[in-house]
Image (cartoon, rainbow, N blue to C red; front, side, top):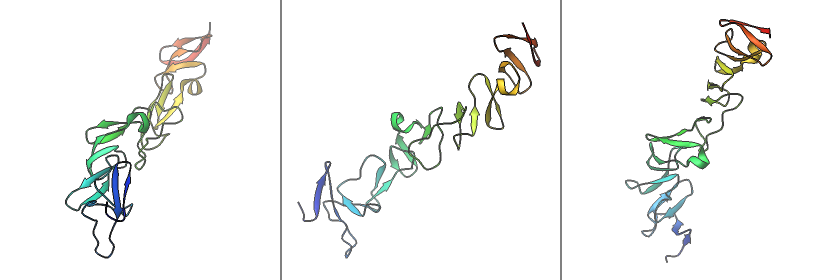
Length: 173
């Protein structure tokens, strides 16, 4: 084994020769972020670019990739992402913050969201979507359990009955 070469998790690496600006022949791939030379690039979050003999990072949302713009796999159980063509898109209930491998969860009452935890795209039952916010029917219309808009109640809470199909008023039974 050449001097300055080490074996780590079955990958051999050595130091970049700064005077000659090269990696040794046994470890030809240079990883600029780590400033080390490897016999091959790591397969998780990295890909080998043979034209420059460099190890380059995958897109932030990829688990594995073949180039800088194409994911080949996602790690769904850890990253909350699934393969969607050439990218790893968040699974329902999570969103893409534009930089994290692990997709953050939607917050508040959002069933699905986009760009932030509180920018809702859809809401659970008994909520309506209003200006990308989920609002509970019971907070919009007194004694309303389910609604189709901020002014139309479809189901009243237990001790009330619907007065009119298009009216949000409920009356005591």
